[in-house]
Image (cartoon, rainbow, N blue to C red; front, side, top):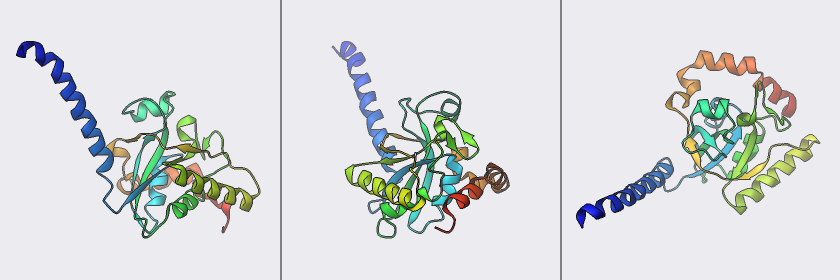
Length: 204
């Protein structure tokens, strides 16, 4: 009986263990009083760097979301059509900064008119998006988007999507702007990110 039962129960145990590990991994970067939000704004190095300058943000984690491929790699996301966006998962203290403030800050650090990508990076993985976790976040994000459109007098192409599974990017992508400051600064400047944002938003 034991010899027959072993092949049946071991896969079930392994599956359960994998599910529990996945839940633990998803929760490990959020404390009891913290919240998280996911945004796609082109190169995740740049969005990560922008958000980590904002008061109330504990950490911004580079990763992938929006596609169906499990545990995608950078090579897969950037060179094939996986459906994933380059995103950041923002861990923040809602007592210091609100989801509305985060979303407004996000829009003011991207080009919301670019339907092909962001700045010098083009392709599906570099498209911009807000990933809303629930109806409340969606309503807030849509309101912020509408206010931005009214302010600039033009419709945004950045969509508000349902939040999907977040997959952390490889270690070498995390805090790239801190690990490789010269390369990062050269990339950001040559890509024209800040210049374009300034042209769009000015002093707004």
